[in-house]
Length: 361
Image 1 (cartoon, rainbow, N blue to C red):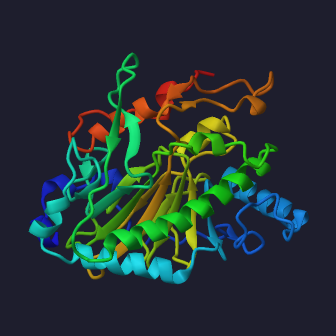
Image 2 (tube, rainbow, N blue to C red):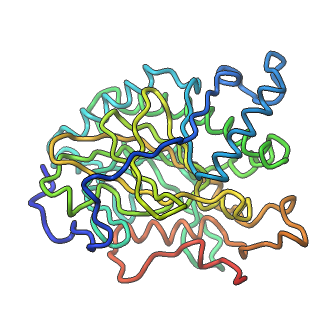
């Protein structure tokens, strides 16, 4: 794997999880035009925005979340040059020697930074990553122990090269935060809730951005860039380049289908916390990334996560006698600490999941 050494057995997926050579492309993925709200700070109260168009947008977003678990957005207000700049500095960073990249290598103490041995479902992913927090430092739980109230801080590690790396990443982050907060308002409206219903959870957000680099792979039939998984946060806002590789598991038949890149679009997918908040009205989508033997690929996911002290449970307004809660509450920060530790220890069992908190029917 380029700098990552020879292809070895740690990358090989179990037979049933290996990619098929001719996966079909998804048809009918919702493509939502956000131009009615793109350039306004606030979805609901801006006087120039037509309330009917906001209602229609919320309806489209709700339908996509309910039926697909993901959708694409265009005219989203994030300038194209911002995205082009972060892609350019990411490519420059990953093109460096392994020795240079490992100067900002992450570990169990320094949680943010470069890493090249990520595992998903206990199989190694064919990729390199660079992680940074939206808040710097990010306030997190110090341990998974429910009785331990101590907090810790995750600090970003910024490389010296490329020279504008940090500024470019921070500039991009500001724009995507604005977008994701507007999406959260549309989601709230789609559920019949006040537009800002979810905003309180993000005061001390633990959101992160990841730069994913997938080198050409000599055995793309055996390995995956990222193995099958669901995102455990609230929402993911993904920028992918023109190469493609994202596949989503179709709910109707369990088939893996490719998501064709749309120029200057973001792919939005529902995460596990949203599934719990909505009491399964909106469900997170299982997805993975395939690689190829010829072209490198770059993608940039923004993972929206709440404050570490957030108690995640179904929203009271969505619960009644006909819709009893389907999940027991859990503290996000404790859950997050357990998940992060698994990045550095190969587990022999599946990691903690929201299913562990599901109330039996």
